[in-house]
Image 1 (cartoon, rainbow, N blue to C red):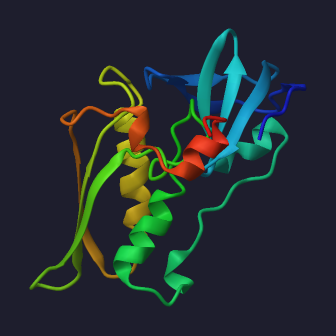
Image 2: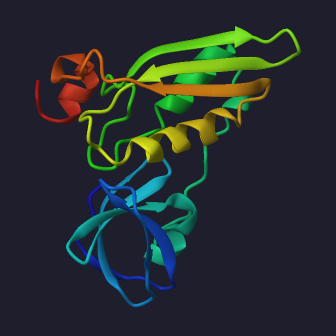
Image 3: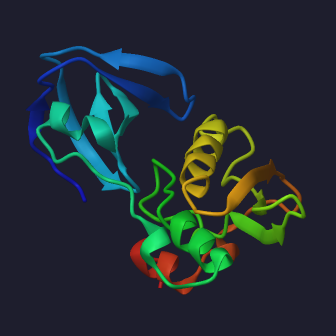
Length: 179
């Protein structure tokens, strides 16, 4: 989604600067433009910068509050639930989910003897210096911990092999006008 109208923030709300991931507060009355509304967050243009606003603060932007999807209602294996949730995680600068971008290299679900399941993910970023890595990882962990019977989540960030455009799915390439 791209909304070109300037919007006045109706109340103070927290945000993360893109790509550094530094926390900021956008003050009531500040003028912004929404550039993306995907993955339960809004990317906004504010004071010459891009920032990520959590979906729960959509009302401050004059938008709806975005809710998380409930994959527990789906009658599918846990690993499929993991993939469904990973497809709701978006790079705030690129309107494509991290799965279709090719950022997720491995995803394993292992039953833990004490009970529950461990999710282990190996992933990368589009650029090694991207400050949004910790933000994406925190977003992924928070979403994956909502799956029933998940006891542990481990996400490892790697840069070997380095990400390149060839790792994107055809869906991602089509969304970005590369097909």
